[in-house]
Image (cartoon, rainbow, N blue to C red; front, side):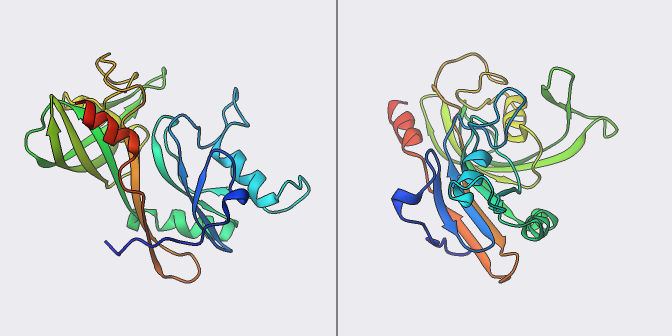
Length: 235
């Protein structure tokens, strides 16, 4: 991967509340989302989202402004890490059309010790009426999904894992590791009920993509969240 760049950050006083802007230019916004914040609104919650906060930010408080943030991809509410937004329909279209070439790396703390220490998980993922994603062997029912991983550290029945997301399906990482018997710590939906972590121990650590207009390769890396370091310390 290319060396991470620091990006163009606005002064702290101009940052949107609840989000950290890693980079901003005329065409894109790269932000770090905390765990617990939705990417986009739902029927029940339209305002406490990354999308809402960034729309307000680019409009600079002027509701009549034509400026807006365009959603390129999403992270689960309880997953922290890097999100990429566009500032125009044209930029959004380019980034989404080149999404398969975008390199996405995650960090997770999972239950147990994985064998092998490096591997690839490939299953067809489907979703039931209760909005629960599951793996199936039937290609007619699900979408083929690939996740590769490397174990970085093991401690007291847990593993710190770096994950390379080759496809980006809903809840893919969580379902793949739960299916192997190693659910992500703090996963209330797919986990084993063990309250090892107050939050979902899944973080979108880095992203590498081609800028929609300059065509330069851009890479951002947030490293490991302090919460993970604390959790590993407790382990």
